[in-house]
Length: 94
Image 1 (cartoon, rainbow, N blue to C red):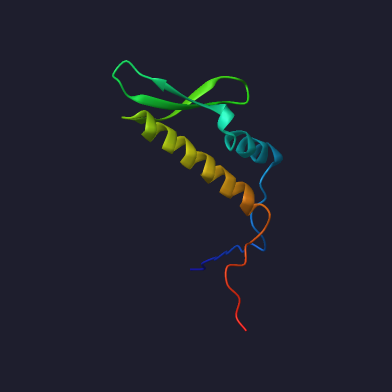
Image 2: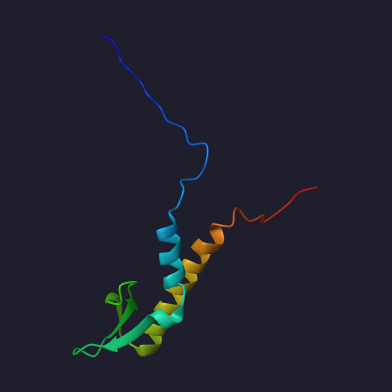
């Protein structure tokens, strides 16, 4: 009986498309977000998609919680955009 083994290696990070980068830029701007109040009293965060339709994301009990969720999402997408610039040096040794 013969077994065949195959492995793959990556020589670089997977490449991110320009469409994905534009999408992250769009989501990292607060003007593309809103908060709506639902009939049950909860607040829903939504972002405006690039085709001008609103997409729901999260539900929170308070408006402050909803705004904090939006701020966290914006920070998340800004970090992704910063990562595209290359690795950050966090510590060097002498």
